[in-house]
Structures are given as C-alpha cells and as structure tokens.
Length: 77
Image (cartoon, rainbow, N blue to C red):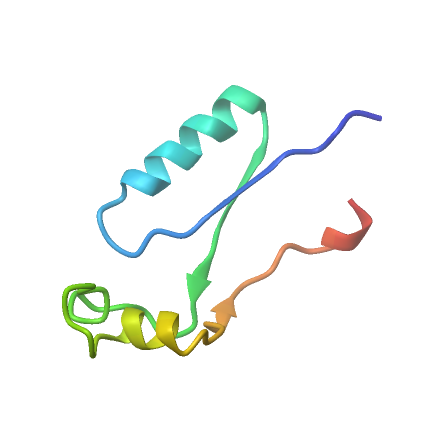
C-alpha cells in the first residue's frame, strides 16, 4: 500500500495559497483540503499592521481558531 498524501491549506485572502496547494496536490497526486475557520475573516481581521486586529489577537493570545469541516476517516487512512 502506498503512502497517502494530503495537502491541507489555509488562505485568508488572495488565493495564492490555494493555487500553490492545488499545484502541489497535482504534482504529488495528493488530496487537497481547505482549512476554513468557522467565523470567516474580514479584511480588517487580517490586517497584521493593526495590533488590535483579529489575527494579531489570536497570535498573541495563542488562541486556537475553530475550523469547520473535517476529513472523514482520517485516523484510518
């Protein structure tokens, strides 16, 4: 049985990360999974230049971000 490849990615804005993940998945024959937060990010949420933005509060507070979706049977793959 061969190794299985999963390309999991998170992209908050531009889509460049999604395109890169799709390219990696295509090259490796892997499956692709987008990590999506339960509460979508707005432009102001991801403004890293603002010390009070959501992304900075999460980073500084070392908060886990709840995500939606899951990969079925991930533990048995």
